[in-house]
Length: 147
Image 1 (tube, rainbow, N blue to C red):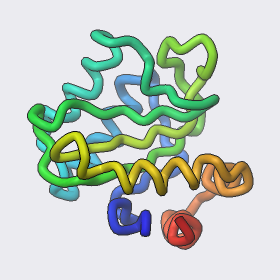
Image 2: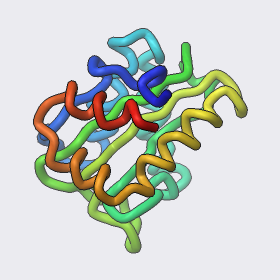
Image 3: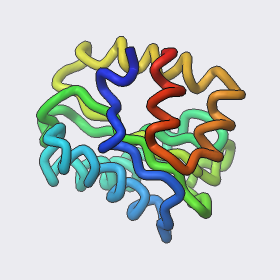
């Protein structure tokens, strides 16, 4: 189940971020606070956009920032942040982003099931709409428990 990797303490809804850096920082800080990553991992996720481009904007309005495991990942985990005002990552096709889901993994395989379940969630337009409109992390956990 998706909630094995994403708990309510890793969810922050309807937050204000001035740009993609701050949006990633918010999501990354949730991973750090929950023991899933070091602060260096958060910096690495932000740097990845500048160094590699906005490839992590995977669908209209949705970004999945991540970094190499050796940059400070401590566990497989996911944080979920919804933004009051979408921000641009520089992806002409899928900007602006309103959902930032920061991902950390310990190696190249440990997060595959998490990604598969998260992709199934994102493929459900109704579920995505409910996440976008959610104001309570418990409701999001209820929703994701089906995936």
